[in-house]
Length: 209
Image (cartoon, rainbow, N blue to C red):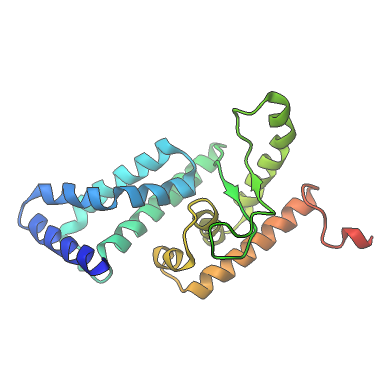
């Protein structure tokens, strides 16, 4: 499957460089959904994610003729998307815009693992009393996420929002699987520490005090 995709990608690149713009449309069809999922995981907004993907392809169109193929086209596009999403996230953060995320503290690699400690941003469609009860948790999770270094926050969102396996996160962030696991462990630890400090989660040593 990967070889088939690579072969098609190379054929489309060759056609595009020969002046066939329809080949670029085909490349958009191949990767737009994947890039959207990455952008949405980091931004939590459909509109922002769509804008980032559009900008990704606009920049790719301008630079594709000079693409050397040192990495796969998909990896190259993902890096553009990540950079644009980072910039968009920082811009939103400066304006006070929130990101809707759901974080799970489990350590397993399966989609169903580690759901016991899940903390969710409140669903605004809930009944008012439920929203009020959950609002403080959501606000403090966002504050905790915003305090994380960029590399930890991105890894956490890709894992827990986009449900990506470790290997795929490593490819998209251009790092090793061990680095992904280390970042997730550190990110969860920092998140728990902050939520404990503000009283959302019990302090690790609280039961003994």
